[in-house]
Image (cartoon, rainbow, N blue to C red; front, side):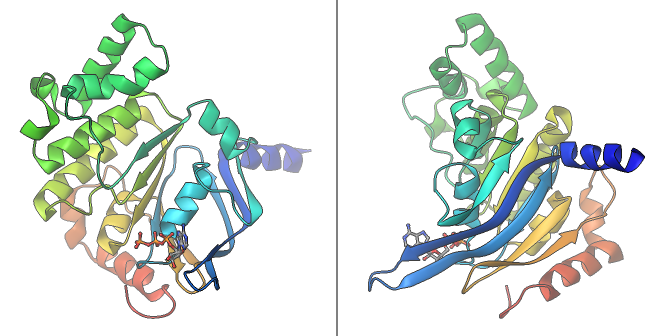
Length: 268
Ligand SMILES: Nc1ncnc2c1ncn2[C@@H]1O[C@H](COP(=O)(O)OP(=O)(O)OP(=O)(O)O)[C@@H](O)[C@H]1O
């Protein structure tokens, strides 16, 4: 009996279940490209997961499969027992891309409010939520500015505020900081971890930077190319909250080496 209860508890904890997912594309010569080969992964509610690997190993394809932007060739994804499409229609995904895709003619605040308008939030609630999110990302003073008046890092913060603003269950981030300089990136890492701690969302973060993956995540899922496959899942047991000084610790260096060594087929 207790075993059964335990099993059910474990089952309840898992939010995203990826079972034997394969994805093939045709290249220009009509040859099959196997972007994903039999991916199996269980992601728990509230976890911070990194999908790490070199260009072409299928990170974006896997993220898009979870987000219902792509249908796998075979296998299935279930999120809290539902299909990705059902979750998408319930607007439970927040998505942040490498480029924040802001509307130039809308102020920062109006950009954050946009998805809430589409979701028919009332004007009062929209304003309240946008104010709260801008405070969380440290942009309150820039609420009435236009995107062009902001630096790249600040624009990406607007994108993060907008994605968290809709109160998603799952935040999907596709190399959100790869175009930013190291200083801005480090600051945004800590900001993101703070928001994640405060909002307790499940985050799936695509990157090809090992240090970034180790610093942010609970688990690093290492993908290798040709065909795109999951080589390893490395648990990151660095204490939280993470602080920049941890990057100089032996534990951090060892974890980076462990992740690097679990990559198959070359160097990252
Ligand atoms: N729509 C598509 N049509 C054809 N091939 C595709 C398509 N999307 C992805 N691929 C191929 O699938 C493989 C995996 O691509 P994917 O973009 O998922 O990799 P990635 O790890 O995210 O790479 P990057 O870091 O460069 O974004 C690559 O070989 C890519 O060329």
